[in-house]
Amino acid sequence: MDYSFLIVIALIMLSTKVLGIASEKVNMPQVVGALIAGLLLGPSCFGLIGESDFLVKTAEIGVIILMFMAGLDTDLDELKHTGLSALVIATIGVIVPFFGGAGCYLLFNEEADSLRMIKAAFTGVVLTATSVSITVETLREMGKLKSRVGTAIMAAAVIDDVLGIIVLTVLTGFTDSTVEPAMVFVRIIAYFICLAVVAVVVRKLFRGLRSRFDRIHRRIAIYALAFCFLLSFVSEHFFGIADITGAYFAGIMLSDHSETRTYIVKRINTMSYMLFSPIFFASIGIKTELAGLDGNLILFAVALTLVAIVTKIIGCGIGARLTGFKTYDAVSIGLGMVSRGEVALIVAQKGSMAGLISGTMFPAVVLMVIVTTLVTPLLLKVGMKRPTPDNTEPAIPAKA
Image (cartoon, rainbow, N blue to C red; front, top):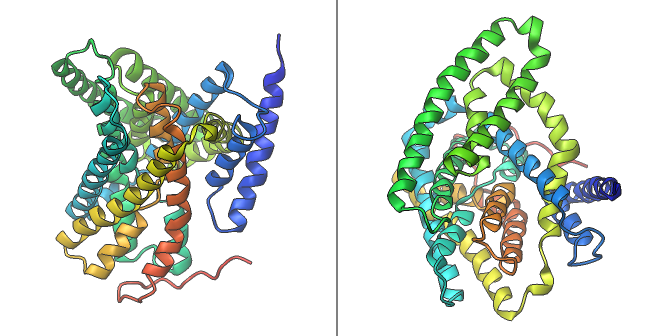
C-alpha cells in the first residue's frame, strides 16, 4: 500500500494554514492563502503534488460539506423579512453577470463546438455567484453590517446563491447530449417535488430529535451529515443533478432549527476547517496550470475579471434603485456583491468535472475569483465613506 497520501495531507494542511494566516494579516480571507498554497504545491510552481483519485474524492467531500454549511447558514427569516427588495436585487444581479460572462466567453472562443453555447452559459453561471464572507467582515469593521445597505447585501446574496444553484442544476442537465431538453425539465421538476416531500419529513424528524435534545444531541450532527451525503448521492445518481445542489438544500432544510443548527454547525465546522476545506481549496490551485496561459487566455482572464466586477455593480445597483434605494446606496450594494470567493470556485469545479470548463480556461476563472475577492474590501471602503442615517452601529477598530 502506498502511504504517500499522508504526506499530501500534511503538506496541504500546513501550507494552507500558514498562507491562510498570512492572508488574514493583510485583511484578506484565508481562502486566498489556500488557493496560493495549491498553486505553489501544484504543477504551476514546485510540482510537489499532482491530481490523484484520493485528492479528487477528498476534495469532493470538502465541497459537499461547504455547500451543506452554506445551506445551514441561510437565514430564512431574513429572506422573508426583506422579501421583494432582495429578490429583485438578486435576480437582476444574476441576469446581468450571466449574460456578461457568456458574452465574454463567446467573444474570446470562436472554435466550433457542439457544447459551445452551454460552455458560454456555464461561464455566465460562474459569474453569477456571490461570496459575502469578506463583505461581512468589512461592513462589520465599518459599523454598517446591520444598516439597510448591509441587510440588503446579505439577503440578496442568499437569494443570489439559490438562483445560481438552480441555473447550475438546469445546465448540468444538458451536458449529456443523448438527453432530450424536455426530459431535463421534467427531471428537475420531479427533483424539486422530491425535495419538498423530503423537507417535510426531515423537519418533522429533527423536530422530534430536538424535543429529546438532552439525550441524543451528540448524535444529531452525525444524522445531519449522513442526511447531507445521502441527499447528495440521490441528487447525482437518480436525478443527474449536481451533488452540491443536494448538499445545499439539505442544509436549508435544517437551517430553521436554531438550537439544533447551532450544534450541527459547531461540530461539522471543526471537521471542515481542519481537513476537508483546506484540501478542497488547495486542490483548486493544484489543478490550475498557469503554464497553459498564453496571450489570448491572459486577455480573456483580464476581460472576465472586469466583466465580473462591472456586471455585479450594474446588475445589483439597478435592482436596488428599482426597489427604492438611493443611487449612492445602490452602488454600495453592488460593490458588496462583487466578491465571488469560494462559491464561484465550487461552481467552476463542477463545470470542470462536467467538461464545460477546460483545463486551459480554468486558470482564468481562478484569477477572476482571486482578484474580485481582493478588491471587494477596497471598493467597499472607498465607496461607502459617506455616512447615512440608517447606519447606527459603531465602527470596529482595525485589528492590530
